[in-house]
Amino acid sequence: MTAQVSIPHRVSVEENIVERLYMRLNEIDTTSRARHLVAYTPTNAEIDRLFERSRLEIGTVTTLHVIKRVISANPDTFHAFALRARHCVEDPQAEGFIAWLPLTTAGRQAMLDGTFSAADPAAEHVAGQHDAPAAIYIWGLYAPGRLAVGFAWAFQRWSTPLYRDADIYARAVTPSGRRFVHRVGFETASTQDGPVTSDLFVFRRNPLDERPVYDSHPNAAKQYTVTVVRNHDDLGKVMAIRSSVYLAEQVCPYDEEFDGNDFAATHLLGYVGGEPAASIRIRCFADFAKVERLAVRHQHRKSRLALVMIRAAKELCRMKGYTRIYGQAQKRLVNMWSRSGARPIPNAPEITFSDFDYVQMLLETDAHPEAVTLESDPFKIIRPEGQWHAEGILEKSSYRPATRPSVDHPTIRTDRPNRRTA
Ligand SMILES: CC(C)(COP(=O)(O)OP(=O)(O)OC[C@H]1O[C@@H](n2cnc3c(N)ncnc32)[C@H](O)[C@@H]1OP(=O)(O)O)[C@@H](O)C(=O)NCCC(=O)NCCS
Image 1 (cartoon, rainbow, N blue to C red):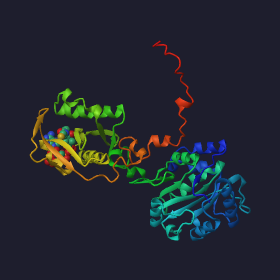
Image 2 (image 1 turned 60 degrees about the horizontal axis):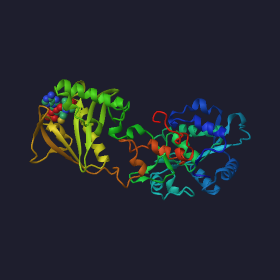
Image 3 (image 1 turned 30 degrees about the vertical axis):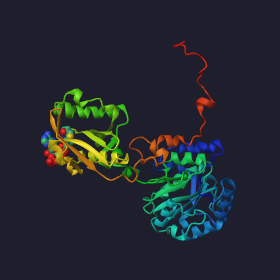
Image 4 (image 1 turned 90 degrees about the horizontal axis):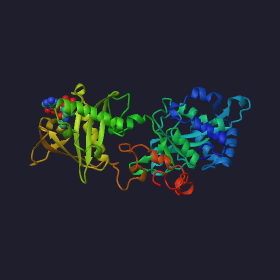
């Protein structure tokens, strides 16, 4: 038995099957895709045969004896696959299988801290057949060719009430296995200290609910959502909101509102449903971050949105390692900022600009336990701003080998003079 997700990578036809599963596991339409598949509990003789076949083809980390011990404790851990066209109930000939371990809380913890044994799982790490597991560990997947869709079939099983809240873990050690788990929505399993190991991946259930407040848009289940501004369209929305609030309502001169700092700042954009409704700007200095330009469109005021925006800004600053967040609050709004934990800085002078009087305030907070630091995983440091919780595009590119295209296989001739400059 192998503990790796070993989707075949030897034959191109088989790779094509994997290509077709290029969507999150929960989005795969198994009703049409799995039509040619039969999944069932195999006989003892079939388990022996499958074990031997997969041992020879993809290796194993455990023994037949351990597999049978686990199956007898929880028969739901092993399912065989066959092609429907070749399947005969009287003489079943399984051609592939999936084996999973429903982990107890202790089992999940052991897996995350590296003490879990996939070769010989401790009895207390594997949940009983009728107990909701804390996590699902894909122990082995041998699903050559068209049987690859058996993985999506298994996901259907994991969507039943018993399993549906459990995150799914898998080890993928080969490049094609890693490509496969990425395609179907797994990400590198990490704790606040960084990746557990580079080959342990997790498919999170309800990933939308787990996103931090500053990266919560879109989410149909939430009334107010927020995103970091990442493109011109988002920045256009921020400009529109601030124009309507500051230029139109507060009669702020254009050059004072758009003060030259907008391309040197992080902006958060708040939504009510699909409608851009609020914005806030963050600028970072050596030992403090400054939060400014909070604006909520007038039709969305007297709601929780202003506080959601402040909380989002605060959390983003904490993730960047800041514990001191500075603001200059319009005097009439000191109470509102105080509700978020900011306090007027003792003895700091009040200041006046753009026709309003301001109180200097400081929000002192604790360090975020998962803040990005020099000790963080290097790939976490290069994730898109505000998406430090999810695997980034550059991590995905790291599964490609370093072929150094411009050095080893140059396609652009550099030895000829450029016509325009020649
Ligand atoms: C400031 C703002 C984001 C607050 O959002 P909101 O949805 O109005 O929030 P609330 O309804 O909770 O009001 C927050 C406080 O501001 C006060 N407030 C809001 N608009 C006000 C106004 N035009 N005049 C005086 N007070 C006002 C409210 O009375 C409330 O006071 P309290 O905290 O003492 O109860 C929003 O009013 C806004 O965008 N204003 C224009 C831009 C601005 O002034 N930004 C702040 C820069 S520091």
